[in-house]
Length: 453
Ligand SMILES: *[C@@H]1O[C@H](CO)[C@@H](O)[C@H](O)[C@H]1NC(C)=O
Ligand SMILES: *[C@@H]1O[C@H](CO)[C@@H](O)[C@H](O)[C@H]1NC(C)=O
Ligand SMILES: [Zn+2]
Image (tube, rainbow, N blue to C red):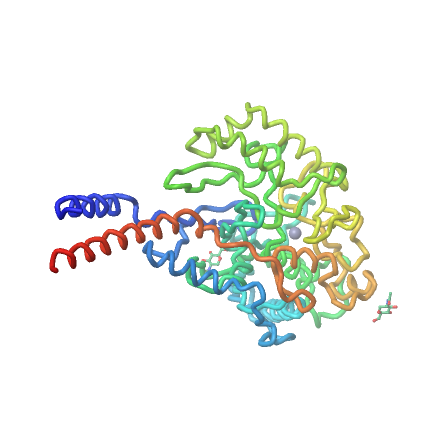
């Protein structure tokens, strides 16, 4: 090869290298903006690997840190509290001390069931919903006791090559490199100081009271990822269910599509045995043909698409008792699945789907994730009524759901792990560019030697 052509080749390659977007990896996470509405979130950039080269380095680190048989179990102490609660409470020192104590108890209970290697951080606020949030109970209506949600969800690639949104609390247990920019909190929670709460040590619980510990334990489990994305994101009056409608960046281009949460991977239609993820894939056939640039536009176009009838069919399932089941990982017998709450008529946003069937699980060891909590029944009472389950308030079915999501437990120390979603094509780009540069420079170096000789 002659020198001028070599120079030209290296010049062209360098130009190509420079003009290509160097860092094409972009990771979009979602931050919850309202703990009382788990499906309300905003996109945030959360890629922590600022440079392309770092991105491939961290990708390799990720591979190393995602050892399937990593054994951290021995270091985990049971009985300790892996939950770090930042409590903001303006209800007076006595009441706030009881609230704090209940959070500590809930944290200890969850830490006994789950083997948590990384502490879970909770931003908890105890405030008067009516006075401070202008959310007042309608006369004779229910008072909202509280709510919690994953503070940030992170896209991860599942073993079916589908990207789903995983709660930060879980991703933190599994992903130990620095590739994802985590938010300061894993769970956001709001509790209503106006509610008639009962606390441990208050004497007998009154029939009008709700056990605060019961409420926060239930809500923390939502914050850990017991949350389905299936909801109506389009209509004011719900009539059609889809997974979350989200904007993602694919190869530098913005696309809008339906994205499931981790929980949704295990949802099955009881009478047909069909995985709900298959329906999501069919719904996304609409997405791939859509040119909508806003979620509103997308929603309008979806309503007049042939796929819309699938969504209205899903709504029918969500209002038919026993129609939806969570089939834990490894389980194939649908009759062994966890029946989800699809008996509420009308459909109730937040209560329908993301809970276990109220009737089926009352007076069982899996009472905790029912949408309603009976007043006058303390957590201790519910455990006794459920048959004194040895695992306490986290029943065996609930435990299998948390294990399916990927939480380690003593019985299941090596749970399923999804892969980081940012480890796909962008890194291959970076690596191939690095390779081309290497070849060019080696060629130059070798040819120089030739000329020098
Ligand atoms: C905790 O969450 C509340 C809203 O739920 C928010 O107003 C507050 O700023 C958060 N606290 C911190 C320290 O981020
Ligand atoms: C559960 O325990 C309580 C007291 O701790 C006892 O009265 C009750 O009989 C027990 N129930 C069952 C089903 O074992
Ligand atoms: Zn709930």
